[in-house]
Image (tube, rainbow, N blue to C red):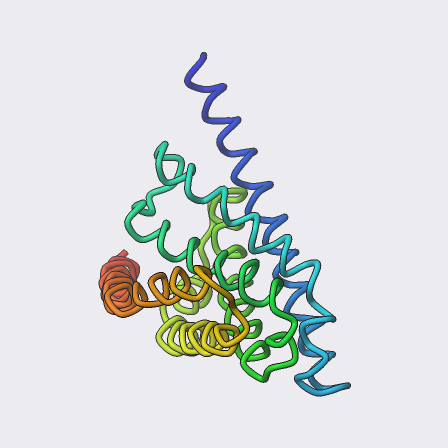
Length: 206
């Protein structure tokens, strides 16, 4: 009975978490697209600031999810991805207004939001209803091949944009953290390619 109750709590929690976060990123995608078309890239950050901060901060929950085994994602992949995004979201773009009208904010926000709308809808359907449409499975494990490099280039570009405005130790700390992108990118990209091959091969033979 306790095991059944635990399963229900897990199902309910992950269903709510995935769908709430999905709608957060959907709002980011919607408002960023409207702002880009209506006012240009300079207006994008102001249009998405609050839902972006909410949605990306919600991803912090994925670290304990991974640690306690609530999801299958290894902490070695989850921590650097979430950590890097939090650095850019809060310490770079939110803290340095000089970055907020940069064109790289637009490529950052669009690559992140498209990725996460696909990812959270995939897991939302899987957790809540037990269904994984193949077209959504394919998008989940294929779009990163283009969107992940775009997002990473945008992240690094915005960090370099902010660095001339940093003072004292902040500059050197940020430079050190940015250096982690060098080994981090190939590690995460290879991990995601391996996952893509594994998941899509399994889906085709199912």
